[in-house]
Length: 172
Image (tube, rainbow, N blue to C red; front, side, top):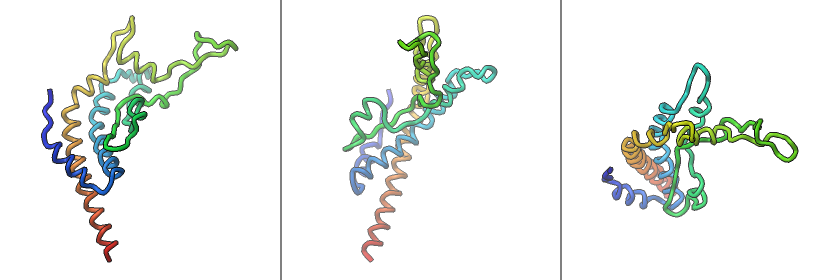
């Protein structure tokens, strides 16, 4: 279990910023900086065979995003922001399947890199899961929290400085 310290002070400083949109932008940037070591570790752990090219698209598809699934439905509004480290399914488009056919006889799209990533992470009945995303998170979560605090602190100071300069210009 991890103990977080100093975040109450950061939360107060964040709340002192100009408006809710500014707070969300600052917090989102900090989360994205914090997610970088998790993404890098997941890429390092992801199965990739350079000799055959197997797994190449999987490694390329691991990215940091702003919102996904349920988080997106909630929206980055109010005081809540979210980010994720996961698979960008657009990296390798799904190919038509040779086994799954539509009524017209053409191939239905296969799962592409998104479906492949789930099988590699969780496993199947015949394949042991690699758990590269979970292991990447577990290995780097403490580093990510430290980076989030540092990035948040730096961005709050920079944002306050920009607001002070803007107020000085407007006062003239």
